[in-house]
Image 1 (tube, rainbow, N blue to C red):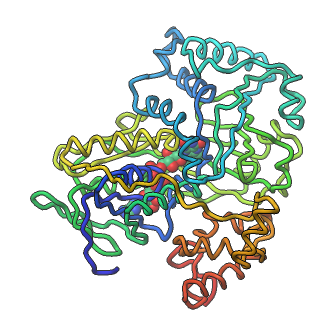
Image 2 (cartoon, protein in one colour; image 1 turned 30 degrees about the horizontal axis):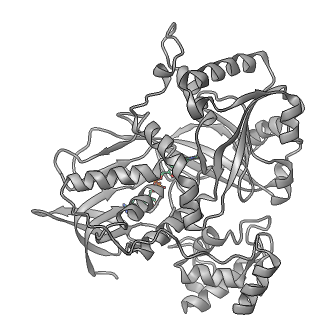
Image 3 (cartoon, rainbow, N blue to C red; image 1 turned 90 degrees about the vertical axis):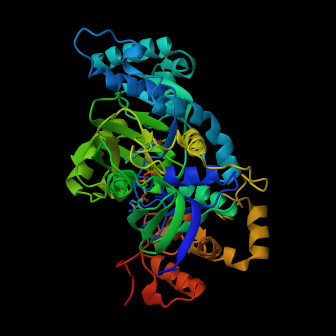
Amino acid sequence: MEGKTLEADVTIIGGGFTGVAIARELSRYQVDVVLVERSGELAAGASKATLGHIYTGLNMVGSMILKSVVLAPGTPLTVENVHDTKALVNQWNEEGFDEWRQILVDLGVEHKDTHLLIVGKTEDHAEDFKKYLMLGQMAGGIYADFEQVGREKIFALEPHISKDIQTALYAKDHIIDVFPPELVIAIAENASQNGTRILLNAEVTGITKHQNSQSVQTTNGTIKTRFVINAAGGWADKVADLGGSRDWGLKFNKTQLMFLDRRLNQFLNGAVRWPNKPGKIEVLERRIDNIMVECGTYDPTDNPGDTGTMREDMLKGLAIGRTLLPGISEKDVIAAFAGVRVFNTRTPGDHIVEFPPDNPLFLNVIIRLPGIIGAPPMARYVVEMLKKAGLELAVNEKFNPIRKRFPRIRGASIEERQKLVAERPEFGHVICRCEEVTEGEIIEAVRRGAQTVDGVKMRTRASMGRCQGNFCSAKIVAIMARELKQPLEDITKKGTKSNYAG
Ligand SMILES: Cc1cc2nc3c(=O)[nH]c(=O)nc-3n(C[C@H](O)[C@H](O)[C@H](O)COP(=O)(O)OP(=O)(O)OC[C@H]3O[C@@H](n4cnc5c(N)ncnc54)[C@H](O)[C@@H]3O)c2cc1C
């Protein structure tokens, strides 16, 4: 690919939720699209290290409560004062939530509806709950669709959480739970099936403007393109500077998260959190994969790639986690990682989607959290902006929203397993015992584009269990080397300079 020049109508920079959602939406039309991602795999930024809730209702009322702390003293607590219905982020979240279930079915991505309990034990919590109930009722609709429940219901739903909990706000199905990297890749695969070209290891290093087009220089070739979309997440400020001027910056907040051993999954059924506090998050959630602990602070950092973790933070997080689910301890933690939330400095409460004044062919799409929920309407909005800017959009009659299903042994019935193994015997050979992933799935992941061991992990969850790859990584590397016809030494964990051997 190096040195080659591709041609495209639209080049999307960044392979996180924002970039791939736009790519899939554009693939509904007869438009030549190239998506470039600087890493060796998609979902390399915030989209990998995210809690991954698709949520609405009670969780959103929680966000309103958080905002209320910045109101001037004496300002009444009304929905208007804490919930900007005109903000793109709020409009898209409401619209997006309703769409996701069907999209997840179309993409064949594992997901489950999860309940939310915001729990309380003190007088302060009781006061908080009055505000939640009042705001929820004022906002109406899905925001009011929750109830205050007592201990009987709480412990029927979550028998193992702290017995100190006296009361809770309960929403039955305001959260859809997914494994985020798998979803990013599934969206990209579907876009690719419908014609999008995806270029990995392609860091954008320069953009040259011509009369009615632009040349995007990457570390994996050049793309001559008409439109450029900047969906580079935490790095979007640097990319924006290549395309035009800007009157906004980015700021970053880092939080450490943990995965617990799968054997603990039986002790939590949904999401449980303390009422929201400014600058803090205290939630335990039984995700589709493992229990996630996100009990920490929003620590300012100047680096969107600041994903290092500290044992001290892990212990603090666990201490809070234990106030929700007593008995969890350091030995239950199988992995810790950090996620960096991104906000723009001009309108931190909303996204920025705009062409800079000096480049009508370069669209900045700067997404703040929550960026997953609103991604489908966001993508439609972006496509509409491109249309208004002159992109011709003839419908792609061949567009197929259904992604070719990823065959899995985990969760399959006996009959499905027998059928799969009969057709492809490598599905009878378990490689990752913790997560029950077979050689067949690893081969499938490689055939679908996994270039690194992390790429296999994101598609299959191989090496994500208790042993964290200690028993299976060597086998995965060997299978990958064979399938990719590469020497063992060339197989990496996540791209450059992370080789396993050699
Ligand atoms: C801890 C945490 C919890 C969260 N929880 C939720 C939640 O529950 N629900 C929700 O909806 N949202 C949540 N969010 C927010 C959500 O994860 C983000 O809004 C979303 O992932 C942002 O996606 P993105 O594509 O805009 O950015 P990213 O995922 O960061 O993608 C940007 C991509 O651009 C690439 N890139 C950068 N520079 C270049 C370049 N020069 N050339 C080529 N490629 C480049 C990067 O490698 C990266 O892959 C959470 C975020 C965090 C950190």
